[in-house]
Length: 218
Ligand code: ADP
Ligand code: AMP
Image (tube, rainbow, N blue to C red; front, side, top):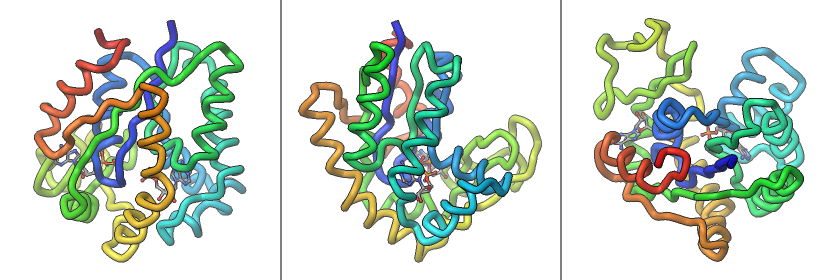
């Protein structure tokens, strides 16, 4: 049976970090809308050009563009077994579109871990985040440093700081999260799939808690 997981939480909660770990352990594909946008920006596609001004301002990219991009990704063969969604859905319209697209192939959202982290911690995490240019592995200058500064442990590629992790943009992204994405907590709670996870502890402990609630890993 396919397994679909939606990682929910504010920017900086640890969704990408945990989705990477879960993808290794469950063999499910990690589908990150933010990574898909960044790939489009890097390749200078039409979508990348349309999305970049919203991303730079810490605003959400319009639903129609975002939904099409993620639905296309989910239609690829590797997602027949399900997916770990990270950063999508972020609005009620996206959540409804996701339910609809999964229903077309008899699939559904099985579990929605909501990773809860206090707001002041989010800012510290985002402003210290470094990401591998090649494999997307996520580090933090103090909380999860690479063995050698600026270099990825996995593939030795260069690490970079995301332009939208500047302090001014971070504040707006968190505001946008509370306004537009936090209502999804209730949406999924009402459907009986929400599981709250305390994200304010070591990466490994958060990961163990997640593995305990994910069907594919049991
Ligand atoms: P999100 O995908 O939710 O925006 P990330 O996974 O990119 O969040 O994590 C944001 C930053 O916080 C990164 O620098 C990451 O290394 C760090 N981080 C993630 N989880 C933890 C944790 N449990 N404790 C401390 N730092 C963490
Ligand atoms: P993330 O990598 O998840 O932090 O996303 C980076 C940025 O990409 C966000 O701040 C938004 O501008 C954009 N983005 C990512 N996912 C979505 C989404 N589901 N809906 C709208 N915009 C998104």
